Image 1 (cartoon, each protein chain N blue to C red):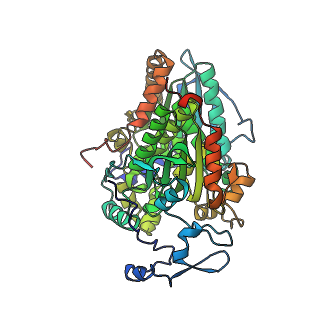
Image 2 (spheres, each protein chain N blue to C red):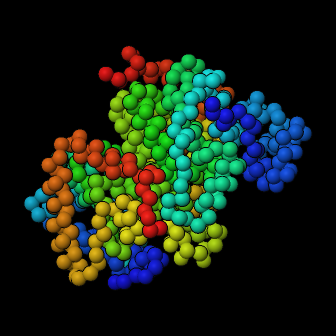
Image 3 (cartoon, rainbow over the protein chains, first blue to last red):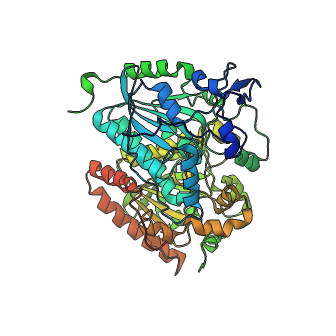
Length: 291
Length: 266
């Protein structure tokens, strides 16, 4: 039995303003409140899961991958796949082993993406959900391999893929092999697409760099969460390059919608319904392509 | 030319006076006719594309052009493509597929351009599109790295059947400067970053990211003559493959980059 996801995960230290672990234990009591960066309202931490981590003003807090799976998938329908793939320090990058240990501790996961199959209001799909608490969802060889295997599995079984992205980009610590994952995953998405299968991406905060420039932007339908940062280059790098301040709202989901690069912005409360409707509309007759 | 450390190689790859794509094109091909524009928005001057003869074989040539002097560098945006450049490249690759012409790409960029307009016009999407389309393009592709191979911006012209690297060319997921400042918050650690990233042509060969390292010795003309001969041989072999098999092999080439590549001497 896979026990992962059954236990309470350590809270995201960053979102709480970088508390020490000792204080974080206290953060699990009902007294701890999180301040909304948009409206300033203080929300009890304990109430957030029920609110899908969305403030009453509409601000979407980050959500971890297991919470997202619980929120989107029908209860008990998610079956994890490819979790056996182990991350190795292939090019002997200084400090990588330590970073990995820290990432495993803070996220409770083995890597920055979780893959599997699930149903959403009864509609079956293959699903990947990236985890920001694991090295900011960066893509190394294992993330690339899991996503690729998921697409290959979905192609073989004529299944649609629903993918939630959150990523800082390709993972520096695996050097050029991280970059190769962009090509590998894009190839797998293309073969899945060429076989007539449906792919829906949900871009969540933040989706940037090598993930934006590969499987995140290759969906048949691209959905984003309100206010999510989505872009290729980091805003700071752009400011340094062009020596200008960037306009308000640059690289947000709303900015991408305005410029024609995403299909729709869907608040968390609506996602399950919209995703299941889209899956239903793209359902294959006769159970898929399998001859 | 000789280089001792990876950082020396980075300096050589970026060196003033290093041959840019235009110099390779004029020596390797004949009758090069430049074809402009992405048919959507603009013509990106950082990417030069067109048709030419490789001996008696018509080919499509797509290159990143950095420019030699200051004026040319500015005109070429220092070889940093905007989305239009990638879209133009893709248009020319599809054209090559239609007419069963092989594609030669010359890669030389610090990276895709980081600008306001580039983001507004979908830099990420443009690169993603090229990766997906190149993997299944039904005509042979060889990418030659002649200087800098900066991250996704370079990869968008390098989803090829074979990647060849000039001896002092580099290929990296991030610049050593970027790596040092993001990871170690210390721009002075750039030498250590260059070392840790494994970005030299020789590293690429070990990691099976490149099939060939081309020595930078003898005259440039002689080097280009050899490259022309090798390109013809590579294309002749691949043109003989059934198209599905060609695409299958290219997919497998990228499919293998997982945990199974474990070089022993790192």
